[in-house]
Length: 358
Image 1: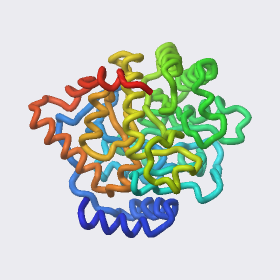
Image 2: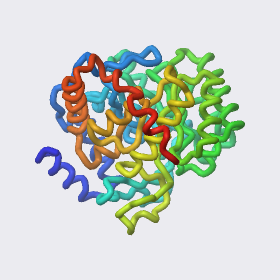
Image 3: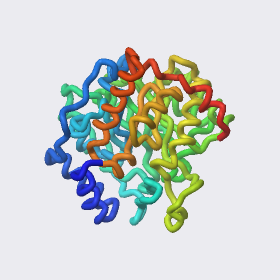
Image 4: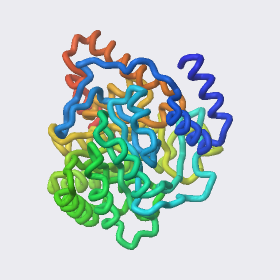
């Protein structure tokens, strides 16, 4: 981390985590921080689902909840940015405080609860950028008090299909009561059937990804893979935050309710990723998320079966220059190994990770 990044982190860490997040969004709106020239190299390009990604590193959903700064995030070097989670109606989310930094673990616990401004506000922003270059995914969710949660996802598909490079169906947040129950096979089958029917009826037909939790057992992963395959879902994002608290050093905060993200999530999310790759086969797209904070962790996700990777919490601790550092590290590794593409690494340690116990 540079001296400038360290000073920026010290400034932001002086604020409550949610206030710091708001300041970082405001800074990006103003054109700060100024990133170096984006790292570009043909060996980093990845093509999946008919989309040509300039590099495999993306900003995960949860940061830009209201689609305020996707282009600024792309300017930091990300190959793609995912906005949301966006629900049909605005909602305030859970009571504050609801974000906790576990600094000694380089982790965060959040119980935000899909706080966002709703479909209408996000659609206006995405419509205003329509026609611009850059890959922007839209992560859709359901309102906490919705009488028809599946209908909420249908509405999200219809509304954002014209603006999204891809859509993500998020049923894996632990902070909306009952949401993760939609990962159960019968409910999932109905959800995915209706989502795909909504996409077929939409003004555009972007790829659809399903974002799953890391806190699943083998049988649940098998059911999800079967439904993803049966309903022809384009890909899976592995994974959301975890409710587990294994091995944390920040004992004082470990008991806070919510989803844990950051460094401690890397191992389990990577195991789930590899197991899902085994179940889905080589052709279905997978995005690996959880504990990515360096070129080494990003490359390991790819070795474990990911086509693309995303991060969020890693940047809280490493600063806005992190995307550039990760991509530069990837290029150095590709050069050292004399690879034609970073894609050549995919699945090289699939068996190692898939053989680990959950």
